[in-house]
Amino acid sequence: MSLASELQSKSKVCANVFCGAGRECTVNEKGEPSCLCIESCKPHKRSVCGSNGKTYRNHCELHRDACLSGLKIQVAHDGHCREKKTDQSAASPGELVFVCTLHVYWLPSKECVKSFL
Image 1 (tube, rainbow, N blue to C red):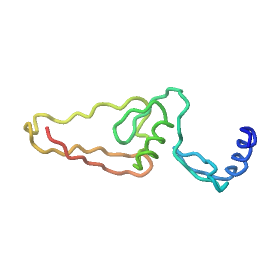
Image 2 (image 1 turned 180 degrees about the horizontal axis):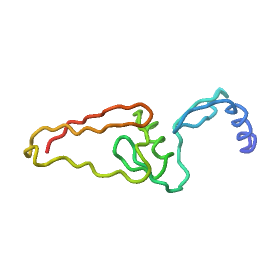
Image 3 (image 1 turned 180 degrees about the vertical axis):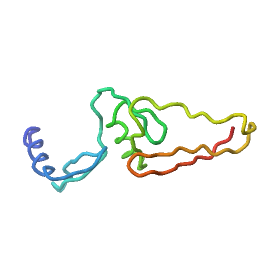
Image 4 (image 1 turned 90 degrees about the horizontal axis):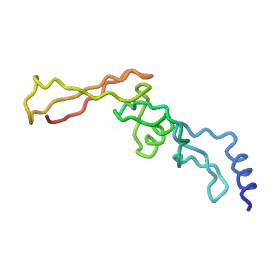
């Protein structure tokens, strides 16, 4: 099968398939549509901050990472993530603290992470 006919076959099989963010439709060995994580994103740079506190080059990279890791990662805001600051005076070194982030993208949720100072 030539590359042109392979691409035409993929476009026909995947025409009405929606895979969701970070995924793309491919044709498996049986000729059926299958959703897989995007192999690579276009290199445009429009940084976004993920709900996991990580800065991504663009929306595609965030959704690709969410797909590959199996985690639910949403866009917290456009631009780079800000450093989380904890109140150092409220805890002693080695003391267990909880760092909480309130997410309000789509549905409000609160995420707390245990960490040691």
